[in-house]
Image (cartoon, helix red, strand yellow):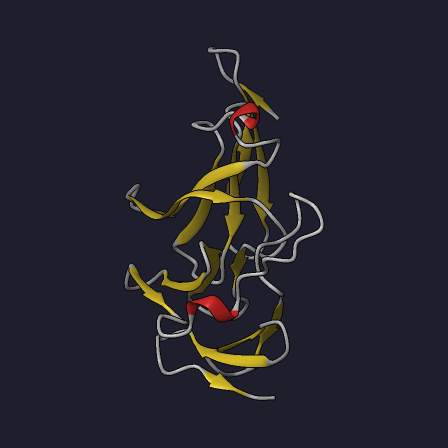
Length: 171
């Protein structure tokens, strides 16, 4: 823990392999996440949002923060529900779900793509039992060694290309 003169508390982790210190979060409700791209961290910033405005559901803006100090907005006002924002392991991608659509964001190229543009209604779960339930049917995961992401709709499993290729129904 490091106390700054403004009274803010900042928390760090030591990145042993690179002998670097990485910030984790601070009192402003800003959280950092490590990615597989050495020069990029993800910043989740809850600061602009008040829980009372969203029925108790936490919202955040997500940014790609580069070692150069540049910060790029990935997605604004995203609900922090289970698997609504996923850092893809062994990859330069993050994936997120918002308003019936799955998106990928390439951390190296700063490019956002809609993964299910032609079939958006397939993935929105309108049968939620609770307001805090995810708005999609689920994310199965990543196909190892590829840029393909598996998700559920109500009845099937779909393969979505993180590069924005055509979705494929697998079942």
